Length: 324
Ligand SMILES: C[S@@+](CC[C@H](N)C(=O)[O-])C[C@H]1O[C@@H](n2cnc3c(N)ncnc32)[C@H](O)[C@@H]1O
Image: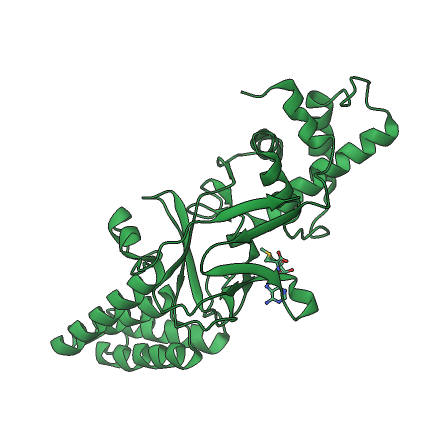
């Protein structure tokens, strides 16, 4: 239940001198050497492939909403429930501020403010100057959420979550980690998809399909087309799928995309009667999935077409603390 004083969360910023420290026993957030990449997450220990590097509960969860007003309202309610340390941590997350400053969003922020925040912390009406400042604070924080949230299921059809440590992970087209929201344990997990050395930056792919480069898409489409009942002989499908596997392996892409390519190889091998090869590919698919999402994810929903799994060799919990 929201207490009136909690509304003051949007009437001031957190103390900028407060340093949010976000780490666990395997990883720490720090500035990257590249100016444009800001803060990143780095390994503080050797991390074997398949290690569960992060198992993190959301700081903020929003339900799937239909309108921008509903989403903003849900965000503001959730934000007001955060502790001071969490707010401070949140205020220091990266903000892609100028991404889409739309009048629609600004108007939604104005509406929310006028219904919910009429008075200042000292009880006086918000004057014009404070009014503008308060709009800015709400707008900025909502944007910070929008820069960092992930869907907890299907895009545009599920709730959204914000995770403090996960929010510090930068993108790479050839990532060394794979993330998924594991509904069985209601945690976001990040697994190492290859061995990671001390000091190496942890990266994930921000792109839904990281094997998007044209050449790879073409290969995959070729493999799928050849597997269909008509036109092309089924036996041609396997070499194309194997070509895709080889390309992914060469690039070092070892998340669920590779698992899916192994699966194609297993299916196509089985179809031409190469049963031992099919078994081998199925085993590789299984190993790859375990390394990317973990056994609990695989057993949790039984949907092996979507995400990955991991061995769960190490489970780290997030320590998000604030130091004055
Ligand atoms: C979720 S944040 C990641 C953490 C962020 N670097 C920070 O300082 O907190 C996403 C933002 O990080 C930056 N970023 C992520 N990956 C990057 C990359 N490979 N190169 C440059 N900037 C990157 C972009 O500005 C992106 O909008």
